[in-house]
Length: 222
Image (cartoon, rainbow, N blue to C red; front, side):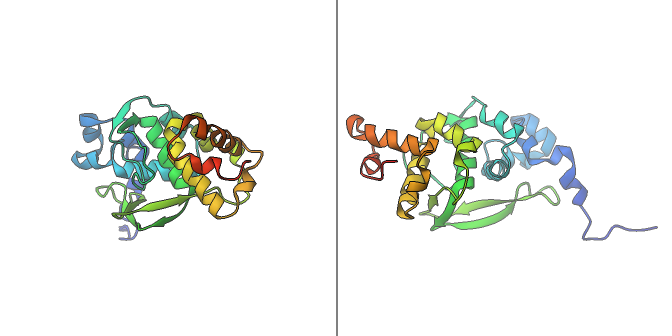
């Protein structure tokens, strides 16, 4: 008779379909608690753990699951946007699809975080070998977001969706512009859809008085 090694104990649970983190966002309320246990409320589609997991998952590979989740038009009040609301201008409610999109973009384009501590925590502490997710903590966190050097931003499905939803993504796009300008790399966006977006916004900012957009009109015209 052979026994499982303690190092192998519980690993199978991580690969059971019912324990896949994405399944926590497919249901809510009593249905979710019945499938995943009473503590699953901490990991449902409105939780910080789920926001962190989907952000990391979709930032690495924007697959069919990610496309489906970003199309969710259900309203989420006081959404849990990763890295806080430091850019300002965030609405008190938005669709769950927009929440997934913003969390994916913030994870994908994060360059560094000021005043924040990255905590690795289990997605679901009640499941053995549950994947770790990154939860940022800090009273005065401020993230800097950018486009990595040599990155093909025009063929990035995440950026394409951000540009299609400027009312939701504008604070993040402004942050990217400021970071790229400070790094002296804003010229790399010339000829891209993102660069054209900045040029258009910079031209119209003085006319329509967009709050905080004057920095674009005074910046590098692409």
